[in-house]
Image (cartoon, rainbow, N blue to C red; front, top):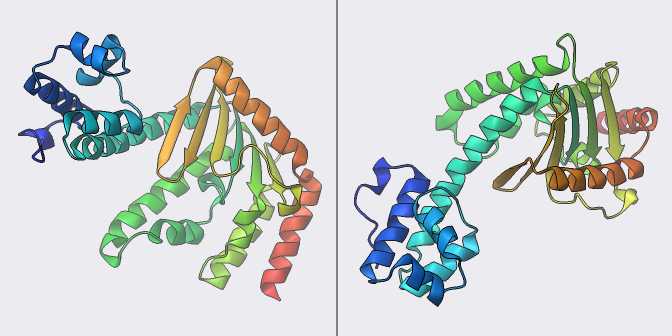
Length: 274
């Protein structure tokens, strides 16, 4: 089977995927119970996938594509649904960020809350074409507006551990990079913000390869948000949030002190200007 079910483009990605799963199963003449018996997946789990109540891992769709001999239909529909889920979770992350009383971050690049306008413009333009210039400007404006978070009253308590890689990847415009480094030094002076640098010589650690946010709401509840290349995951389970906090604590112990971090950034700025 290579054709997608009709009208899939009118549905959400998850609904289209669920409808395709149900269509393939019914076309094969199997009940959910029979499908569960012939695969390693629980009947209730398969039902939630078909009902669009849950999004599986990619490997599940690969298995079911092989089972139904449906090419890569389910994988392709899964990728669409995955993008939608990412957007929804990012919206929820932004809501939580705007309300957070305490926010800790580990970042492989200068985070949006600490970016200058020109740096943000270059970052957001990097994967876009000239035809998307208006969209880039809209996103720059939205990103810069979020920075009110660190200057509002009362301001949240923010701690940023910035990986050295973020300080070594310059922008194409030398002045934009000078301004960004100078801005980092300025925000490091805010009483509500602690900035630390994790130098390369600190070695390997448990957060390599992804960004991490830990946020505490005014009621004390905490969440974690992990973001990498093409994925974002909002984590609310207390035991998993605790695991991420432990990983963060270990990285914080490896990072330079706030005062040494400021001197490190000044050194990078001096190298850039020379």
